[in-house]
Length: 281
Image (cartoon, rainbow, N blue to C red):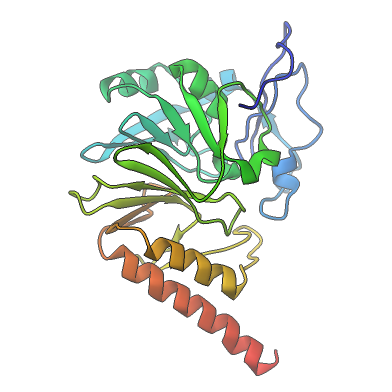
């Protein structure tokens, strides 16, 4: 577990970075900078570092709650905030996270059977994970390789290691790495009418053409991954049984044939890198 140092004092607020949505440890004033955004995989906006609070989030945003497929519920924010991802609830597990948690969300969680755990693909989506865990008395499952990016510690956070963690008989977490060393996907064996669905965040990124995916070290700064790392990720994904992919956003879905699309997308990626390397450019 990752313990929270000390107890919040009167006036302390767990400030939220307005660019990436990461919630930080409670304090009277926000940090001078968001370390997540200073990393080359993210960015600080043109207007500089900007902060908000959980109360402001609840006042300025509403919850978008939709059934994605039977047994899978999506949670997003309106208007869009920070990176704009949506979370997914399946078999009492919240996959990825958003900064907003309010009474509408609590009602939907209760209607969906409750919440036991939160599991997150990578640090850009840690967001309001501690608020969610406290609201629903849940644990948070994070890969230990990314522990340095936990900006708000909590005794509810459990770090796991290795390549696989079985959450329940139908849910498995698999470390694929790439975008972050602990980059994780969730295999839902009951998804897609029993053919299996892979919840990927942007560890495997569904692109505009739904016949393809991609892989990056930094998406906003367009820094690619090495060819060998993309081949490794594709090989790991190839060992999993699934037919559908749900990425990090409402529209980021490959309905069917996803394993073949991941494999040929990786081959295209590697071919492009090798082609330009061979040209001497």
